[in-house]
Image 1 (spheres, protein in one colour):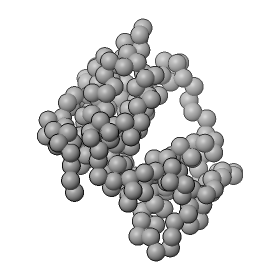
Image 2 (cartoon, protein in one colour; image 1 turned 90 degrees about the vertical axis):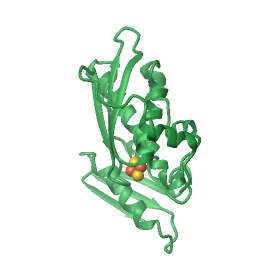
Image 3 (cartoon, protein in one colour; image 1 turned 60 degrees about the vertical axis):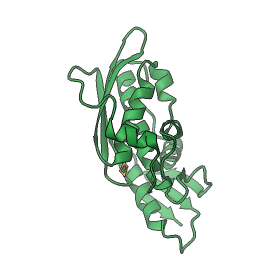
Image 4 (cartoon, rainbow, N blue to C red; image 1 turned 30 degrees about the vertical axis):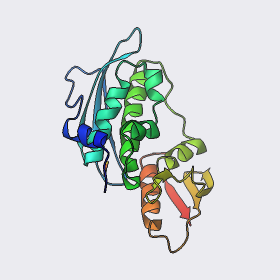
Amino acid sequence: MEYSDKVKDHFLHPRNIGKIENADVSATEGSPACGDQVTLYMNVNPDTLVIENIKFQSYGCASNIATGSIITEMAIGKTLKDAFNINWKDAAEALDGLPPQKMHCSVLAVDTLQSAIKKYEIERGLREPDKFTKETIVSELRKVLYPRLGKDIVTLKMVKYVGYEEGTAIIDIDIPEFDSYRDNIRVEIEEHLEKFQEIKKIKITM
Ligand code: FES
């Protein structure tokens, strides 16, 4: 697996690593794809809503550490709104690319940043807690990457149907029977959706 010089640099010399003891907010997210985890801490200026300090701790792979490092560099000095708009492709591009099967590491970094921002805003009455809808399922499916191409299954038009009826999430995925990533995709979808208490049952057809 070939890593860019930037990934190597951020892995060997991670920026903003550690814990902020007096953080205004912290959030932890895990990657369903591999079980790795990132915790992010932030201090935010309450008047300007600019991220003034941000640190992370990583329990994962080299790409996990590198993406944690780059995402904190990208977010510091930005308003919460601007930092929330950073997506996983921005993070991967800022590292001069990641191998396709490591793209989920940048999804994890961005997820953690967005969780921390949402948490800060909800706790201070700046945002309503998310309402669970079918769109919630679609946005989770956007975090499920097809490892061969390093793109998400929604962008790749592999998702043929999404439904939500009385606690059951219904998903139809277009993937050939002989595709070796079939089980991966199924497990990853389940892991992404299991965290929602609104979902009692997950029905995936392929
Ligand atoms: Fe787990 Fe990279 S392999 S985040």
